[in-house]
Length: 161
Image (cartoon, rainbow, N blue to C red; front, top):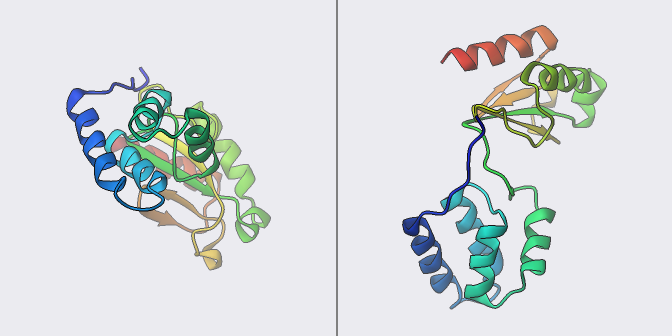
């Protein structure tokens, strides 16, 4: 079952307090959206409406910012984030094949979360470990010289934890 997004009164109150704090400063939208992402884990339209009502910024403008920057997400992410690097050194060494295999293994596409909410999959551009290409990450752990078999093993091990 996929994660369901809910807005609790406590989280809404926390966001409204953060908005109030940031409205005192110039250019408050980005810090407010970062706080919303921290509080809710994502910034779906329901959260965007709260921000819009409290700041006077249109939902269209807020949505444009949220969908433009990759650090923001519209949907809840899984408990664990798998990233496959598609930067040039990784891509040349086969990371697209690894990404395709991981998508098949998890049954999801890039930017999606497994039905059980355990994994989300991201295509990342570079994590600075080009000498170990191709590279994948699971949460804060980075794995180098990955092939399809190693990727599947790492996912299986992460699921077993």
